[in-house]
Length: 258
Image (cartoon, rainbow, N blue to C red; front, side, top):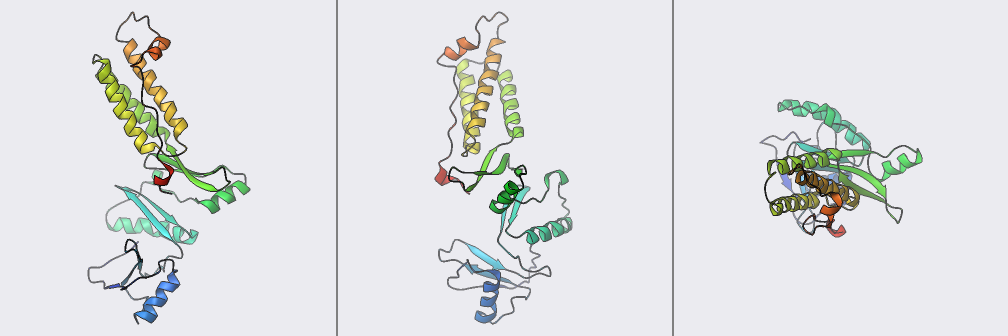
């Protein structure tokens, strides 16, 4: 968490910097190359060879970050990943005070600190404990073993996301009770394709197929209730060429961010 002031000086490192350097390496560049104090209240900015990544060195009373840190934010939801446990502990202790300065508060039911990643996965398997999972942006994130035995981050739609989507589909079909079959089909195709595009990660195929069947059954119930004396059953509707829904398609593995 940076407490920036409008009068805080910013120093840009000209040229190319190897961003694989540690905190000590960057501090040495500031001290020996710039002849400045790396503990001064200032920002020291470094750029990589391709000029598409930055690394900022800034000292506060709580110290430098001992390892890598990564922030993912969407609207008012955010996820912070730390390489070192002590950095996560210090961040979690100071975050409520920093947010209070801006009149903000953390939601206790959505806030937690947990070990996650390859090392935590190995330790959990050694202790025969259940795997650690967390929900973020409508997806449950968890670690799993690949066929080659390596750790891999996997995602799947949360139960809440699937339930909300199915409820919305049922409500829309009831609102369009007497519309034509083609109108229903166009709506369901668009809704399912949008759901597939967002949740179509490797490992999500079983859940998406289940959701597809639930949507078809909800459509079947709506069509049957149009008439009080409908003799057709599920087998008759499945045999019709128009009674169908798009099949889930997953994202290519080379486009999935790890």
